[in-house]
Length: 154
Length: 257
Image (tube, one colour):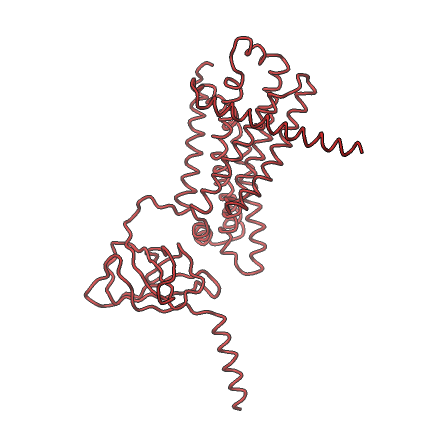
């Protein structure tokens, strides 16, 4: 078969466009990281994580600074989650972590409240002060029972 | 009792056909590995199967994305969850609609043409002429086509998905007034590379192998008459479409993509 420069060019462009689409889906949409900014792992134990999932956001003041790595049980049957946060952050050792909900029924994420200590958290350190997820059904349950108690007292 | 015998004959013919397809696939696999590599023929086929399918893939992707955006918006609006539109459009396109619809379109657009082409070669005794010159027609004719179909399918599927995401964005953000940032962020947080994108590409690759094999096999086994070519082309579209959908179910059930 003879060489056809225009056709070859079109095939080349097609392959480039296809690979570009694959790359867009993988990196931008799929969240595959290619190196990116260096991350440092931090650990935090929670009594209750609600519906927190891996790859959920970690934010400080609402700004995304990292994501949840892994979630598992530690020896004391508490949830141990790994937070992969931007390594450039200088987080004091008394930083606390709490699990929040976006909106009333939205996704769970972890919010860090930066402390004031001079000592800084090192990669692999544990955040000791944590606030567990608030479960809506428990709040509603409490509300109902406290309402019933009040009705009895009157 | 004749219908029992008919059923038996049908089953035997099916198994016989499946075995021949297996042997055919083996010979194509051997031709892929053993030199000479027919790169020119392969590039020509990528042009015919890929580049010429671009318009239909783009238009269909856009249309499917726009419909998904509209339907998704109307359903989500009932629950006040329209900010999740990106996740709905993205997940359905990436996990299911992208690979499956691309494979069905490629079957109709390129698979049928491949079968008709090879079938006509059979009917006009061109493949016999090749055999007379001791050139293996599977190596020269079938392998580049099957290989090109396999290579092209994931690329077409990815382009289909990107067009669909854009179509959903167009309707959701442009027409329905969903916030652009929440469309993209719900899309990006819902889609995972390992769970969704990789599975989508794997599906497209398997469909590519399937369509390429069925199209070239049906072409090779064409009854050498004009009615035979017509029957082979129809059979390619039917068999490939049905097996795409069946395989899709099993891939999803087994690997959860």
